[in-house]
Image (cartoon, rainbow, N blue to C red):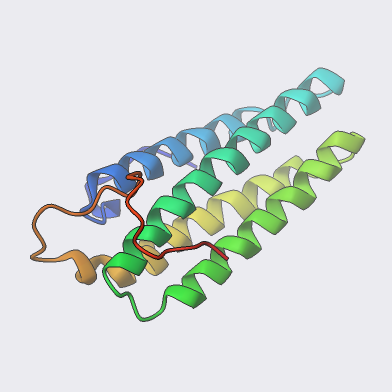
Length: 149
């Protein structure tokens, strides 16, 4: 698959779009590992999955904070999707650690999940920010009452 970013993927929030681009890059890196064999290849795949888990967790926190601040009515469902994704990625990491992993299956999951998440699930909240000036910085330390999970 071509993980090249397209303008149609944009949700209109620069910080989240940049994170989505980075997550696409990590998916591309995972795809490049598909045909490599051996322990080093599995270790590299594991490292990519770990980086993806860490980056996705930070991205989800930022996204959920914005959705909370702007009153997105489907926030809980969106959070549940994020949690299920991280649980799946954790399972893949455990498999990669044991040295037994279906890289093609994981790659299919990543591609399908991120395309669905960005193009359908995230597009559903795009309207929440329409017409808003000065979108809140999701990384600020301001206590807005948001807690994750």
